[in-house]
Length: 547
Image 1 (cartoon, rainbow, N blue to C red):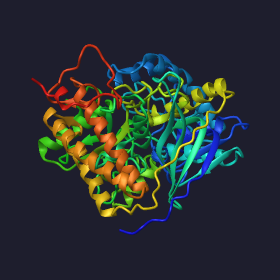
Image 2 (image 1 turned 90 degrees about the horizontal axis):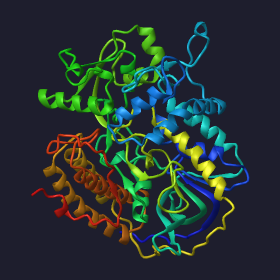
Image 3 (image 1 turned 60 degrees about the vertical axis):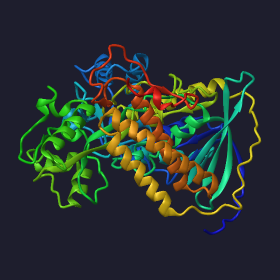
Image 4 (image 1 turned 45 degrees about the vertical axis):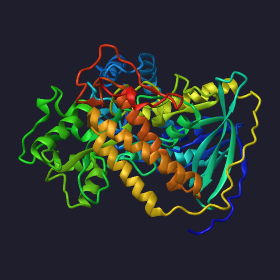
């Protein structure tokens, strides 16, 4: 174990600190007034994150016979009774305006041919009764992200901090001891391994989801639940974390790293088949391959278990060659890398974790229960997605709540800045933790979550998982306190908190609803309630044992 150099601390002060550079964080930074100083934190490069890899699109009502009311109805139905109606209606109402704003930022969405008046091309995905998905071929997230980053780089009041990793939030108790105010964040500079203090009047968490807690995920490596874990440790309410969405169709190949096969491929006529060519989705839902994701993922999982399969097939080869190449150029090109020509043969697919439907509990203005701390995007639980996110509502949510934060901050921006003096633990005498230990713990946790807290759950597996996670947590916290802080160690610590929250939430819910299916509680309760977890809640295993 080698000694480390002293980590020199610097203090940086802003009006607004945005942690996360996806669609939510970038769109907020872009909209904030030029007289406000903004610090924008990115764990890696600005473009890296789930937004960049989003293929499908963004939902909005543009044509009849579709309507706002139908968009709301579809979302509420997919959310299995847990959506907040006021949030769903507000987001759907603003959807068209949000698309127009993105067009103004230079986002080039796919349009119909000139003969169709050159209007936006709308496609259909699971859970939607009408075509309402605005897209940019099959790489919508990349096109949106590129446009937003281009705009952000042009603003002189934004300071960009790439390769910086948030460690923990800094809070201050108010006169009312039950109220906290967020005043900053400890952040690791990966380039020189220094820990700096970032202070701000307002802090916005836009760090994305927590899907890296599972062994197989369609998400990039940045999705380690950092914002949720930090908020939990600071005292935020965390809601509905048992609802982890598994995307039904990810490319099955040992070198593909769970490459996502967009739901829009099924929306354009793709069929789900067993290896013998037999279709099976009709046995599970009248909507077939366009049923909501929770239903399709469980159906695939069940068929794989029944037949002892490693994958099922997704076939669109019956469509015209030119149509496939023009509509899905990214998927076509990627599959060719693995010698799969989707114009001629089916794609082997499996479910993989894809989206965190729960998160930091927020109101319609994106406020958390800690003053001056906001959360937007996948890190937040707004109530839009309920127990199962409907396809292509996530990017819409990002922009909607960035606009809400913008308006809310305008009301309070003249408040006095509350300074705080905090010292981080001196790391002068600390040693570097061996990477092999971190990687081993990482794999253990993710494998445990995949096998014990997956698509289909049981009380026995959940209780065993909780016991093991509690052991890992003690070891990891000890490692974190004794060793030099690194990005890998920060993520590992956050993952163990996320795992604990998911398991606790899953044990608390005594029913099956949406993405949470428990064999021991196969029914759905008449009254739908959120699961709210806070670090003040005692996590006693006896609470979960059935008499």
